[in-house]
Image (cartoon, rainbow, N blue to C red):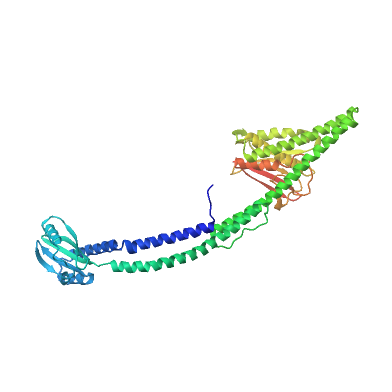
Length: 459
């Protein structure tokens, strides 16, 4: 099992490691690589001097330029042709080991060769210092040599090393303290959010995650968890209402089925008419139970997207006409008035069975809540976004604050539960999930005491 550490210790250790890395680089470049760096810079400066001499070789005050370069850069400058000296600055008498045979031989060899440049290091065995000689041929039979002393750096390096020991100790102590407080400041709000999240996981949704860290990511996380807590609280309330409503819908028909079964068995076993009435009630209540179970299963399938959409072309007008034929008995027996308004036949692309289910559920909803005139209006309109289907009733309407919530399972505008004449209270939730799976726009508009219109647009 992988061992995990706290955020506080992680941040603290990372800051300490960062300090150690910085100090390591400081030791490397200020102590270990100082000699190499100094030599590289000296060589670079000598090449720069030689290039400047070449540019001013034929000017009138050339000797003044040489004296200036010699003095300002503390170097020796020599001009030779083969083995004859043309010019030599006074500083060439300083820090030179003229008895270095290897140097003399190398210098003579370069003058007689076709090489363009020459570089040599002279070591003074007496004073233990080094001198760097750089040569370049700048004209026909004319060669310039620039000599610079490589100062003995051992004492300087020793001073730097001694100083860095104290700097290292001070920086490490400061790093420990600063890292501790920084890690504590950063980890504290995260730890608090974690504790609050545990509370929320245990069902306490009345908890706030607000922080004042002024750290964008942590504040955004707190806001997200606050919103999550609110939404979970709403979901929990709807779940409880859903369970209560489903329990009520199951309990009532089961009670009636049992009661009428006992009556048919004990009281009306010989009375054929009464027994038939009892059995009809049992069948009706069984059908209601079957409808409720089917809607619950259907909603679960739609939400889980178990059945993939089967997209096809079909005539929307013909589909709506076929659905309306199912309500002929309501027109004939209960005086319902279904008004279907459309201008042209519309061929659309969607899952035909699912869209049929959407329209059927919305018409059922309109039937349940329409006004005393028992009027239900179905409109098909052509818009810029696609084909818009509207299904309207003439009922008492819905408050604006409840419009966004009516798509939830078993949500009631009137919290006092009343059993509907038709349907299970799951129809609008099924409609919502089908339209979301299609990616279609949908909505509802309502005017108090005038009615409600549900709509969706097939792209």
